Image 1 (cartoon, helix red, strand yellow):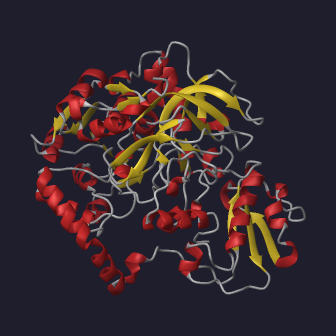
Image 2: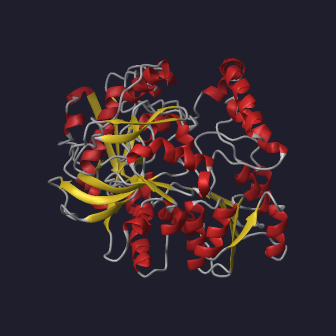
Image 3: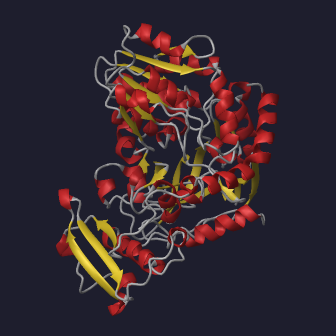
Length: 391
Length: 162
């Protein structure tokens, strides 16, 4: 079958790969309906997560139709239309039972890599390097889904494929950020990054009763999406001093909750961007934490900063003094999607969560390299490039 | 930063990157050594299984551990806070724990036992050992980086900090 693959740093290919087959009792084989690029893929493309091999199939955000079920699967049947959480959780370990699904003890068959890096391994993730399990990605006609009773969710009738697709990763990741940051009614919430995850974090913050939600980015079309489809306010960091604006918007206090949805390749205007870029290229730091620093600086005393964008290793000039002296709560997580996807699908079915606007460019698998180029370079207002393996 | 300036910075930086890494490792080995990669003096390898202690029968261990027969000692005790059961194993002959690099590359004397303990935990909790291979993939280009990653990936189920 044809698949979109990682061929090397900044090199995406389309090539033939073997079809997956059921290996464990709790597997299903899914016929992929839609599979979408994610901002975190760009860290793989850029070589910032150096655990990809040439030929690895990309993609971790997807939906489709169940084509085959393993003998241990009880929840799904052939023909079910499902969306699948990008993280792989067993549903049986202590972490899964606490609904901290991305921390699953058993979902990563290569635990030694992330144990070496982080002290403990976390769950696996489709199409996200050998450090996260070596699972084949979803930019292909078929994908094997392990622990399918846990990670695959039936899509309600009336929810389109294009909407349900983002219940796989963007929406539950945004939900994870706002919920785990414990947004409260009346809060002022700032979100760095107006991509799919940032927009969804803003939406969840609004649903949780935030009084004011402000999303920060530099791309006009993304900020316009935030205002039009999410209903949050926006700041263009190339036009204004973000902490100053946030102070003014929050009565001088600073936001109660600051959600960073940018990750290890953040951009900024100031000289610190050049500094971070050089240090990252020299491998003196693995990640550029520009937006995270600003979030910590902007956050009100006693507030919460949530790192939702993907970081891989180490950052420099981390403002620990602000964290400690302002008594901040600093948290982070990959998505605990299994916890939130049922709620998200229900809200989607009631039109309270809409995501179709994120799919700005839909194309075939043959256009994989073009899709990633458009997504990376933000060509033609690309917010997300979506692949339809069926053509 | 403009694109061209960024590219120049990137090229220059990449050219010097490996040299800088070597120098930094030499003068400050802590930056190249993951924290906590040591090993307890007792030699126990421990996982917490989310099951009651009564569900973890040391007389009928899961196959990966049972295969070690009397070459291992086994200890089971309740985990505090309702976290299940702590399952600990160690080799009776108590070999050297090896180096941190050996443990992280899965080549230390306890590597097989570490892998068996992980598989036993999966069998107790989930009933199956998760398999990832054969995973569909395209053409593997022969590169030094790819070979290194393949070797590390093969070792990863046996590697770890505990």
